[in-house]
Length: 313
Image (cartoon, rainbow, N blue to C red; front, top):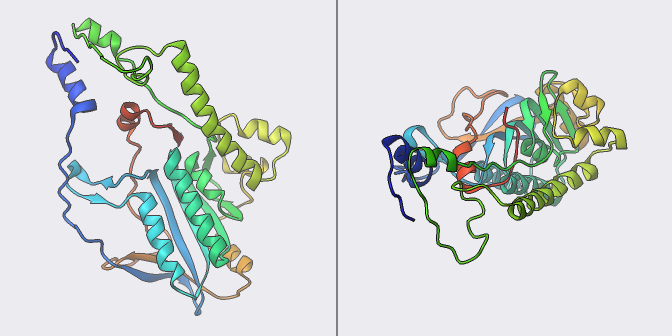
């Protein structure tokens, strides 16, 4: 690449998007052991609360200034499922979903992990949708036999989005020229330094369509939608809880307590503890306690061209 002339502003933009090197100093190099905490209920049986929150990704979640990091959502879910699988008292899973979605791969892996563990251990799964449970988060909720939505939940946004930034015009205005040497005509398809050709646009759209088809097929398999309901659902719109119930995207409206009762009923048990596996040192946990959310890294999606099951309000 050859840069003929630049300005501090453009240099900053280029550095921020493509040249940043994050120095990660992990203040907690060893994960704290998980400790079972009872959130509600009684008895020897356990229903495990599995948190699906924040931006769903396979990448570690960074703390402030990149100085610390936490396991990715995919890693955290698998860790909880592993602990649950070692306890014969576990009789079911309750997914607490509060997320706008995430990358295609992360959403699909979490769905696969929950479904596989539930099938292997004969656990009924119920999902409770909180404030936002859109796109990839709804994809994960499809692992549940029943989906309970809070009366004020926003859900839907079924489908795929991919972001590409074209900064060619900006660079031209400030006198920056980029030369790209490549081995194939489409090797620089997602580069932000030029518009995509019609051939490239078709290739990208075909790829997006493939990911969408996977999502659509899962909805059709897991939910009983009429043809008219499906036409509305696949538009990519978001829905309030009442409309989502009318479209049969969710089964009923309620709260976490209602979802807990539903898991027990599906498991055929009268009493159980709703438990969470939390790092040692956590205190005063209740059914609404959870990890801090991680917002979508839109710059990363722009720079890498990752397809996402994501709602971007």
